[in-house]
Length: 297
Image 1 (cartoon, rainbow, N blue to C red):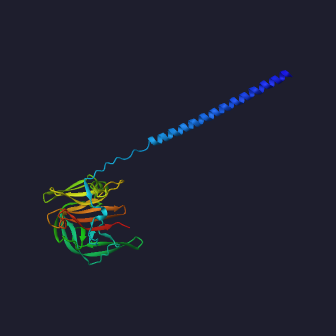
Image 2 (cartoon, rainbow, N blue to C red):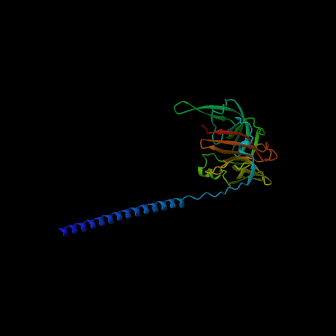
Image 3 (tube, helix red, strand yellow):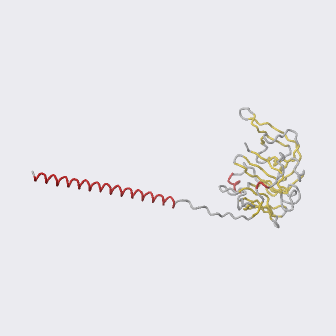
């Protein structure tokens, strides 16, 4: 009997020791797993920090500084006195342009290699959708002969007669879109125009307003002095894009370069702007005198 009792004591003592050792081993395994998990999390956090993109370096350097704020600039009151007939081919929205048949406009047209301003009466042709509904658009035609480029109405400095054109951009459908984009007025672009043996240089550079707002600057040089034509906001996503040159030449017959430019206000709309040298101040080579908006909602 005594021998059996000793056996049971030894057995239960061994069992208790075994259970305790197993418990400690489970606890040790659990602690190891927790430590390993914490280490993995720490490693993941470190990796996430390491792989963050470094800040973009600030490489914008303003060539022109202390410019008036964008909303401080003054422009002539907008009037429906300019029509683009080149890219739009005379397709006009009746939202902003209530042009009637018989109205008299001064039209620039190309006949062979000559460009001439002529007075002509407008012919308004209503456009309808395929279903026969009013489309809100109409076609404007002027019987002047040749390819119509633009039409103006009481724009100072312009009068009938031949004009000297140094450059005209092809219609949008005449060359590939990739070729059109090569001529866009983006940062670093420089365009030269030979007018009566004199080289005029138009380029895009950087600027900054008095308050530090970044802008893209369009500057024109006559070989002796360079002056700002216009400037607009600089966008981090798209940078500087001041549009395109549609036509450059002496439109007001004063022997100096005039510009007809296109700019994209948004993806849905565009506008063209006419700049004349005869209307410029002593601090300008050209001044904005008229604009045409199309493609908007």
